[in-house]
Length: 329
Image (cartoon, rainbow, N blue to C red; front, side, top):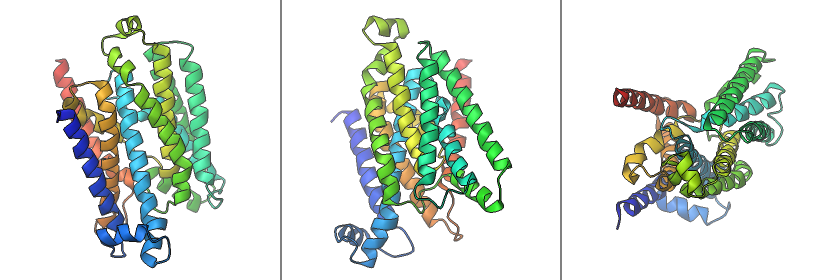
């Protein structure tokens, strides 16, 4: 068994083990065996109802959102040829956040799925604008500048909505949502996000050969028959679908797409194509583990998932910046 295959097996085993742990955690004591038995029992028992309505949606969202963020980070780092790139750089995450905050601002949170749909709309507008700007010029610089501009505008509009919040309850809802969490999510949220996330992940996985050729430089990649504009649109649209749909149902969760690819890159020989699938699996492992952690911390108040990932990711990011600085000397 090659080192790459061994890495995939280890990550898949971790996904399965942590999935069992996630299903068994909560105020109601349900063991591993009971959890899997209850899943097959429909909703005829209290344990099955808890699993289907509360714990299973959290697990599925952890797998989908974590996998998509890890994969998006790996693809964007390969496209931009920068290990410090992450999904937020294209501005879709901030735009989806603004869409959700807008729904909460107008007190539409009571309407079924109004917040996720508003977030998806914000992500869609940002994606369309990004494609319009980036498709006019094949340069990576244009893509980065367009993403930074969209990100800044969405962030400013979100801050404006928070500043002008009509009442303290709406403001509290906005702030809590922006922190990111899988709590109180349902299978409806999973059904809403899953098609977009899976389509985005498929597009990103298809970009592997192009990203590998891009390591040799844009001119060499073009001479090998790689369509650079097509590759950039493939990665941009794929990442936008993943990030936009993920933010729509979970709120803002940062640093997963930054940290995971960086940690795995030496294990795959710095090959951007081989990095994609392990990053998806490791992203799922990280978010499911973090979501399990927030449920067992003492104190009675469940920490927001975005807070936990930031506490983990920020030191890792500083370490990467420090390492990169030393290498540039």
